[in-house]
Image (cartoon, rainbow, N blue to C red):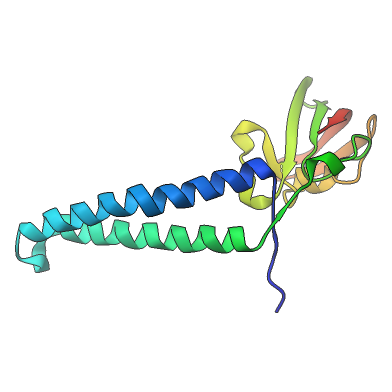
Length: 158
């Protein structure tokens, strides 16, 4: 079975590395201290603080493993290779949304970096998929849960 690569910008890769470092150096110690304090309360069989701290410890360790796997499988986009004539992963696209009569900017990123509220959409999302390979002045129709949305590509940049 072929492992799925995680496509990341350098910025996204660096953020994941920072999160792993934080979880390993700060969060682990905080959780270990909470466990230590909870143990001091005695009788672990009915100790909610202990159970909560142990659950948090498991979540932190699970997140560390997940992030380390993502970093191991990461393919970093060389932003200098992004063609400003064609929409690719890593490109920022300014579009005109005909339904809402407004201009919107999206940066196309890998799924690990997607953050729609901050304009970073996954190359695997319906909108991201529809933009990939398109050019300036193309009109793009995208099937979304609420129907079809039409965008006109105004600008593509790195």
